[in-house]
Amino acid sequence: MVKALLDSRATGIFINKKMAEKHGFRLQKLERSLKVRNMNRTRNSRKNIMYQVEVNVFYKNYVERIRIDVYNLGKTEVILGILWL
Image (cartoon, rainbow, N blue to C red):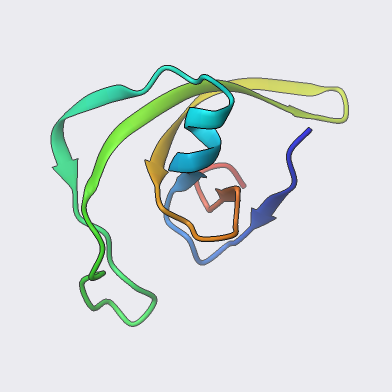
């Protein structure tokens, strides 16, 4: 079980790279990297998003297979943004 941060301001769905690697998710390299912007629309100083993983998301009786962008989220494991909400 994973605790996820629900963030209606986030424009994507993200998983922490360390967590994805720890749990053995298969990282799928993107054809083109994705630039990351902060809340104030400035460019994030960390690297671009280079990978995605495919996972099943379970919430109560609901299950959905989704692709999640892999990024360094610090202490946060998963961010579920507007795309999932």
